[in-house]
Amino acid sequence: MKKSIIFVLSLSVFLFASSVFFPSPAQGTPLQSSERIGPEEALSLLIGEWIIAPMDDLKPGELIVKDGKNYSMTRWDDQGVGATITGEYQFDVSGEIFAIDFCLGECSQPGSEWTTQVGILRFISEDEMEIQFSPDGTRLTQFTPKDNDLYFLRLTRKKAS
Image (cartoon, rainbow, N blue to C red; front, side, top):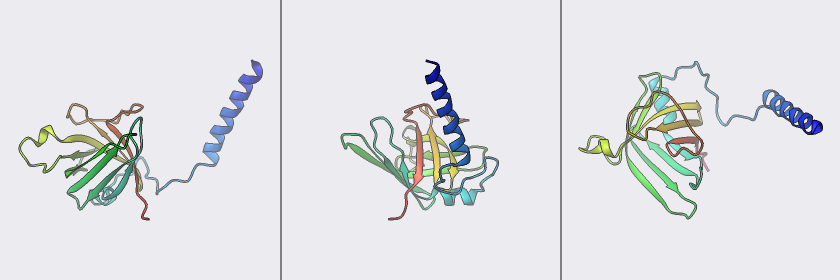
């Protein structure tokens, strides 16, 4: 028993030291937590093709953000059943936390408030971001991801092939 405890503690110290002294290479340039991203830079970072990380029964998905107004998002389950939604998005970088809304179709259509995913967004690096949507349509004020939360997306920039 004592040997197994010592082994576990030694392994923990080794793994911690390895992560501190030999960190894994970042996919993009890391952003400083105190760094404020300007509106033009944030929109520039947002536009592009993104891979949505897999979770539970969902395979990796894809988010394509275009021209400052339009997007398409595709998700598949393990059985290969999927859907693509398209529409307009609204991106607000004026607050402490960036706000993003994905509308089904046009954001200005009557009734679009019922089909809009209301979310917040943060950039981890130039090639990584996270989006958390609200389950009830109200604007979140902080990130509170939970394991396998269908309202929380981790995304990495799709590499050109």
